[in-house]
Image (cartoon, rainbow, N blue to C red; front, top):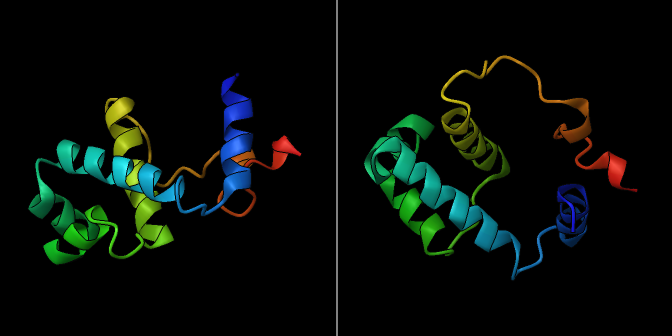
Length: 103
């Protein structure tokens, strides 16, 4: 299965209870690791450590905007910190029309 097909499949699942939390929690765990701990990530995101704990335990969902900031942290790490946070995302993967090329 190619990366594009996988993205389409994931997009069609939406917030399926068995898929979305796993992806969100894995991304959150990676952001905690990159940031140097839960307290550092909480400070970076402007939330309390208790919120991070609730998200990690799947007691509450990570707000969409916060999740996108978490993804930005991961992308910046993968890119070596070279990405420009003011740069808009590619139209193909924009938040307003995710995976629109999959239809």
